[in-house]
Picture 1 (tube, rainbow, N blue to C red):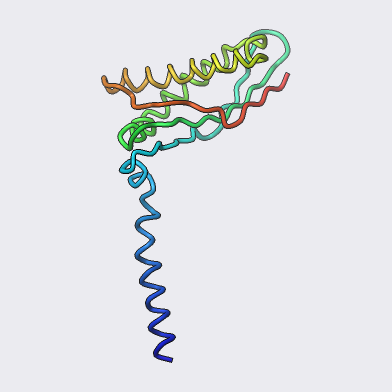
Picture 2: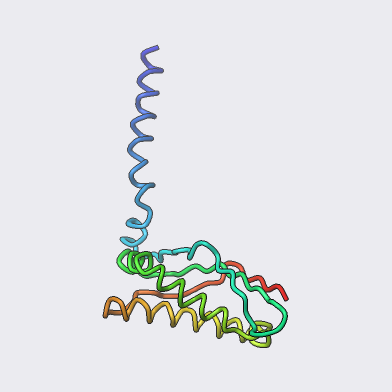
Length: 140
């Protein structure tokens, strides 16, 4: 019985010791130089294409940053970032988003907008490395 209690206590101690490391994933990744990913939630849903029949675009985006400071900047300026992305997405034309080149240009433009928001608000380099479309749905 004593062996079982000692074993159980050892497992409990090992489990508790593992918790702080798991709870601090962002700090651990930054310390090892790995990228941090920040999803821009909720997904963006906008009307696009101008006058005529209503068209909808839904985009799920994730930003890749280089360190914790950049991640905090993105989170802090999320309302301004979302505003710029909504505006950019709603200005798109159907001919542009129908092509792979158009989608890539849209991705690059969105990345540029995010960097500009952070640089304008903080007066320093944004630390934003890249932007990814996790999902891109168009309804015509």
